[in-house]
Image 1: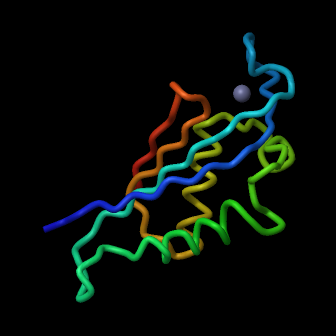
Image 2: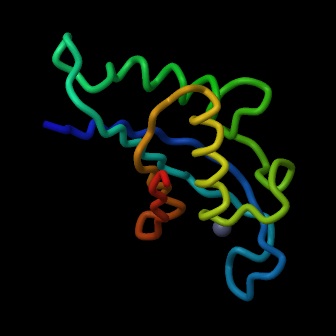
Length: 119
Ligand SMILES: [Zn+2]
């Protein structure tokens, strides 16, 4: 039986979208909420993946370190840091870090999020 485990993280970051006609045009910040889902079979321990193992990759590849997103200006990392493109970049980083994620949900505001599924 396949089970999905999920972890939620939060980071603060700034961005500007020059093409945007509304509030996201000028430089401003968001309190992003990142949800990472891992789908799989239970292992001999009875878990899909230990939460701590997920945390380790997310911390190292996404949140912390010199390339970490927390408290960064996302325009210094991506030319056009839309929620969609930030989520795709996070997915690429987690895959490079060896995390077998199945779905990523990135909340840019309390009511607005994007969801990407691994192909
Ligand atoms: Zn914005």
